[in-house]
Amino acid sequence: MSGRGEGEGKGNDNTNSSEVRKDRVVTTVEGMPINEPFATQRVGQHGPLLMQDSSLIELLAHFNRERIPERNPHAHGSGAFGYFEVTDDITDICGSAMFSEIGKRTRCLTRFSTVGGEKGSADTVRDPRGFSTKFYTEEGNLDWVYNNTPIFFIRDPAKFPHFIHTQKRNPQTNLKDPDMFWDFLTTPENQVCIHQLVILFSDRGTPASYRHMNGYSGHTYKWSNKKGDWHYVQVHIKTDQGIKNLTNEEAMRIAGENPDFCQKDLFDSIEKGNAPSWTVFIQTMTEQEAKRLPFSVFDLTKVWPHKQFPLRRVGKLVLNENPQNFFAQVEQAAFAPSNTVPYQEASADPVLQSRLFAYSDAHRYRLGPNFNQIPVNCPYASRFFHPAIRDGPMNVNGNFGAEPNYLANSKQYQFLQQERPIQQHQEVWAGPATPFHWATSPGDIDYVQARDLYRKVLARQPGQQENLAHNIGVHVAGARPDIQQRVFEMFARVDKQLAADIRKECSAASSGSELRSKL
Image (cartoon, rainbow, N blue to C red):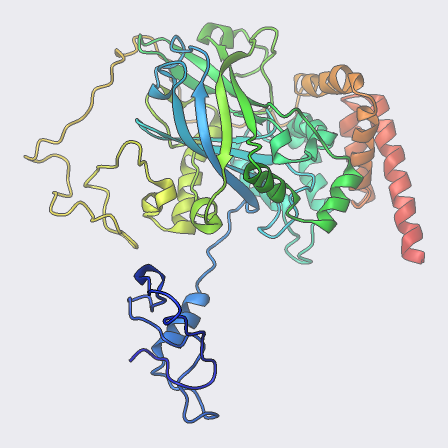
């Protein structure tokens, strides 16, 4: 039975108006044609429903299961397809096929996102932005899982879940909580966040659109050429549209008027043919240069000085194609730093090392263990062949048929030997298993770059020092007085005038809040 009879809810009958197209005939999930989409099987016209109406049961059951777990964090995002094109030769640094010749193009998918908000939250709020790109290369899928800031709040991976909890909602009130936010970050051992806070609470923390912001690897990576030479590398993706930011008040106003402002801006721009683009640069560092740094090359809270390690151009990232289905192509996209290709690998950065596991594991939870079989995640430009990785829920790729499910067999599977020679000189690690994290109390070196950003960079931009103090003061005004005091003391180590200005802005915001509460 089709589950659809004559009666109320009869759909439009278009079968006589034109030739029937089989690919447009509505069916059940098993392929049986449906002739009445809105009629239900009942006892008479006004009696109860019948359980045998399998089409209705199927529709309701699937509706109950449409949603999947949202990302934690980076839930609210937007995406687009495009390509990466090589403009400059860097084969002396990296032997990956995607960089093999000038003019070579590699198809890609980029997803932008906020960090702390839920899927339905506003995308103009003050928050770091995710900037992740999946390259469909001939050597496999490569994921650059980056942010729009060159550094991060923490450098010890065990702190990450705790930090993200403070960026979300209070477990009792279910409200965003300034106490949680500032209590964690002003704890002495967590004040390495100071550099990121100066960036976040400047107007760079509220970019005007995804098209008008940069992307950064943040982490140190390790790239090698086909001779076996290797370098530490950081990647910079600089917008060709120019940097544009919003003030705190503009960002809040737009968040209320159009919570999906950045998503709409990206989609509409591409739809009109105004494809946004970015120029990709790298910084490189030798092992010996890394040893001479005043800080660890694996410290995620530090940037590499540009004078000492200048930017080197690599190519162009262009986004010129909107997704045809957001859920299938963006919501189900799975980015992970562990998705690498030959000649590009992770460094010993401990936060990066932890992400190598955490991201893929998050996808297994969110999308299922066979998430790589979802079309947007498939390495279609190369292929996937590993008969020992099989079975599991929603395995839809044939499951390798009759191939043995073990590799040491008489089938004589082939293992491709890379062109590069064995690297004779590698990092050497030796020592006891040690429970370690960075100094519990940051030293002055942890404030130097934040101080330089405030005094040397923001000072050259009219109004930016004032906006920084205002943005911090307004935000911290909602925290407890004892936490406010810790904020003032922390920023005093950056600049005493900055701390005084924050205190003044906080006092003004608190007074305004008290006045409004009395009205």
